[in-house]
Length: 349
Image 1: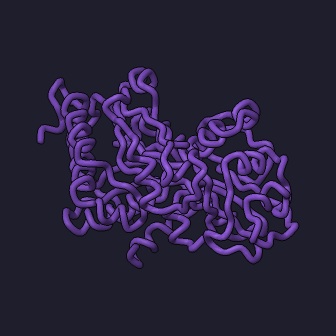
Image 2: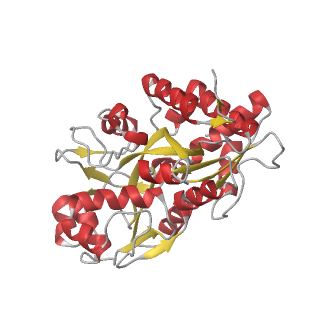
């Protein structure tokens, strides 16, 4: 990421309602929601501004906040990593589509442990967040790391305190690998955590992990890269050891069949495949079917079309997975058929 883009992203850290680009004008696009895709949206916004002079005023406030704002009509689009089911979309006159795919990554702050040193699996992470594994030298962690010297430091689990799609992906994954986690905590954008420290946004969780000895948390991989955090490798559904990287996210995404997903509702956690990263997910854009302002909606769609067309390399530099061209064509047809003003399609390309 460029120095300027990094500065822009830093400016939103922990500040609800902050914009990626400085002063919004009448032509700027307004959006709010997920922190998961915030780094790539920032990078796209910077490039798009230079090319078109149209800015993106995006509030990185979490998926729950983004859903509330688009439902209330206070922004042109919402962003969420928790897809809405078709009945929810229909009830609120909304349409959604996937924009980019990324990975949620367990990260730690343990003395003597370097990035990629630690190995974890879903069942062990679930026990940590249930509060049944409390020390880093617990026998179950040591069994996964026979050659790693682990201290007897207390584990400090860090979780998202706000309603978030990252929470949804993480808890959906843990619920898929642990019956006890599923029954005691469950899978949702907001859950009641049995133990740990709460922080707001991927930014807040990253900061909390960095300054808390013995911490473990979960953030989107771009935050791991930008902050040079200590990530854990994971054993996936096939029992294979994988690192968080582009090819692992691509492997998990390769099984996605968007044609069979009503309203593009598709969950990509715990996918089969030797190379699949187990906590992979798409980030979604949500807009009103009946555009309150046709010009604003068209301006937003032009930005998303540009991002699909010219943003792949920028996304890959941050280890996000761009959508295949076949899916992009599906999405653009969704725009034509579903986003209208006065009965006419807003998008006619």
